[in-house]
Length: 167
Length: 420
Image 1 (cartoon, rainbow over the protein chains, first blue to last red):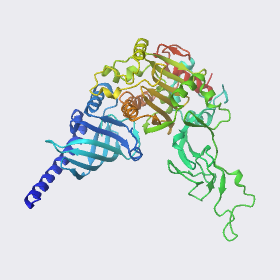
Image 2 (image 1 turned 180 degrees about the horizontal axis):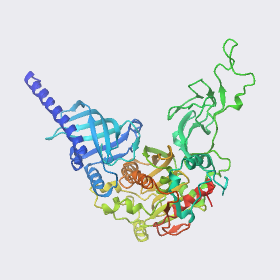
Image 3 (image 1 turned 180 degrees about the vertical axis):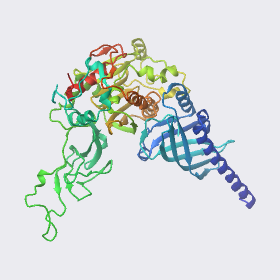
Image 4 (image 1 turned 90 degrees about the horizontal axis):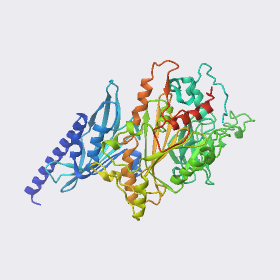
């Protein structure tokens, strides 16, 4: 690779990293700001999303707490939480660290990002609802980066009351 | 069957007129009643799920759990026997096993290194003879008189059950013929754990015991199926009860017409439900049994439930964590010989239940709404449970009934000595 070409590739990668970091922020803000309809759009069509405990993840369990194989299942989740499910109004605030990215091919990155989520109930009760890490595989072949897989690994196997909004 | 005193020690509590159709809210908030339950129910003639047999496959394996508030450890002995003891050192009462699971040659308390065999017998006391002839235990110290308190154990349908009472009947008799038959149907093959998690719910444990038996609320609170217009072929159903009314099965059957068509078409492997789901493959299913029962939730007195809904096989049990806290554990299972396709379908269907269950997540909060709604109520305020009759009887053809809940309260009253 010529010096000029390798400089272009590096600049290209730096841009991709910024786009991914922006996307990670947009993802949590759409959930925190009650725009959960946007959530499936951060995934490729046959993207995979799972919420699972650390112990389940380490044990290689198939079943966690939430499991969406393809965008359709995510859209069904959104429709269910808007129209079918009953729960006490609450909102999240996600705090995410700077993602640690690795380029795995010309079109893909992997990432690990730690997070903490607070949950605030309508009566003002506010507590740490979840902590853990996102383990991601990203597709950067299109205009914006998208998740091929997002595994949400929870530190705790215990969910307080219920989990309706995605993390 | 009344193994306990006929009058409650809390003399001021009397069950109101109306028997099992009236359940005083006070049962969910009275600390004296909660303390009595720990003694009469959880140390009484009932079976509790301690773990699955597959949790402790090898000699030395242990798993910690709770019966009521009592910490318990289950072990697999060198000879392959399953043992269970209160997880409490006979010396000062410290927890002996700290981890949730592991493998040990013996059980040693970290505090003063008292050491126990895998069945809880004391076999080592540090510095028993003192140091350089000074100190040590008295000459008449007898290790046989100091052991971890044992529970009776029965391995039944892949589950390790435990009880503190000598009066608890063997599991098959305790659950009765109808329950035993259905448990054997679902659990008598080698099992595989597909996943687990728990849910902390902010209410008294008995509200969940009611909820899991409440077939009346299913289609009213949980509207997932109607929202997505899932065409249910299995609307025939009912409630089966054990003879003593304590245990129940809420079941749905494939409609008779549909059943004959499906079976006539031989080789039906995968049946699909019509729906407006964007991803209908979530409900992709195959008929596992020929009795036509597609959904069953089996509630076993007092704190255990086994479900096989479509192909989602799960065991749940719940543990009181104080008078107004209940932890609900979900164990998702498959059979050891499941192929990838079956595991995939069970995994997709697991989305319907658990802490994030599309059908059932409401159950995480609904009982808390009862707990909060009944605060400040008068001493004689009570639930009204007359849907489907006043008695405790099986209900064929209808699940619009509270009979299984009344059955729970019948058993509860008998054990607590609350029959007026």
